[in-house]
Amino acid sequence: MNFFPSNNDKILIDAVGKYSVTLPEKSKIICNLISKHLNTSDITITDAMACIGGDTLSFSQTFKKVNAIEIDKTRFDYLKHNMDLFKCNNIDYYNNDYLEIMNTVSQDVIYIDPPWGGPDYKNKKNLKIIINTKKLETICDEIIEKKLCKLLVLKLPYNYDLLELKFHDYKMFVLNKIIILLISINE
Image (cartoon, rainbow, N blue to C red; front, side):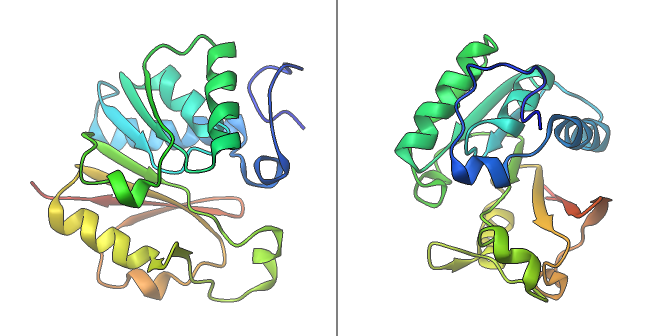
């Protein structure tokens, strides 16, 4: 399976990356959804949980600037290495917890592909997502309330409990077993 657009044997990937990286064709679709929604690709996007860079690469190739944030030191090093292989020069890297720096990063779009709970997420119904100790919905509320971006994009599993976001207006797109939610934030 190709985790990146070219079959590059120099790509660094760990066990988490193998089951969580967005495949290139899906990542391109996500980029197109964002570009069409905002009617431009001249934007800064924050990949809040960048992992080893699957989406970060597509964002770098599509958008003006990318903020790539990864909390895990090993995956952060893999992320930088992988983006260097593709000569991405429009990325600012942060080896940090997104929740700790979310109020200090500037962007037009925030993209959150949170941990889904490992490969066993498929066995759960009405999946709820917790990041550190915060519910995903609480994080979304904070982003919206503080108007940290123009567009909030969530990549979620098909079995995510959408009722958790019942108070938000969103556009939903289904990509096989992935749900993409676009939440516009009024300025």
